[in-house]
Image (cartoon, rainbow, N blue to C red):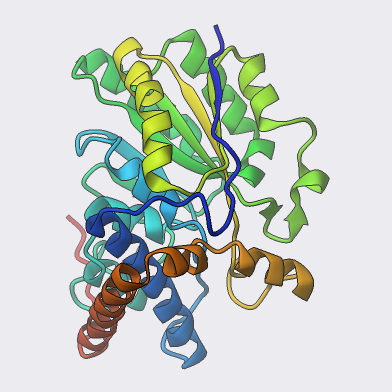
Length: 312
């Protein structure tokens, strides 16, 4: 049986409840981390490219308390927030992206390919789904009640491997939680031009439980998703969650094709503006704290020598 649940649409200025300091600090840490990366790029301090999660910080922070350290988390190209929500410490990730000493993966993974303590990210869209399904099979056989959580974007629902993994996950009753960050645009292609039907319809076709989340309230999201994630864990069944979210920045670096009025509308819905207005004292204190934390991390990592990768 397909289980469907829907949170109410987010209303700016009114629907955000006050967050525990720990959650707000983490959301702001992710925000300042991403902004620091864009600044480093503009100063020629980074090579390659990067994909920020500006506007989507609340998604991995909401999931943080619903996942166990023993669960596996699979991330994608826009995964800095996923990593920081799991490990909270930004210095090793920044060193990885900058190729400096102390890098999480010796500086060979860069922004998109990270492996650490049951956390894996890949820049190949949709590729993580079959891998996550395989890990979910292992976790089911281990019988410890752990699950595999995999973040994908709306564009990944056009990848064939996603469907093969979902089919196997349902047939074999695997504890696989698919967390879709639907920001309405895949690189430069609007959702209506790249996806026939709906994500909900796809989950329904496989008989997989589905939840649609349009709220940006971390506590409300947790309250709604907790029983569904618990059921996926307890009953060993797949679950698809679709977060209706906003991507405030470009796809990678300076490649945003959206018109100015559309970007202005997104910025008006940014969670930071609504939260700052509702809880100004808490926001100001933690914003200053996290701004300085990231600034210190940048100073620290910039002073280090190049990373050296040693094959095990």
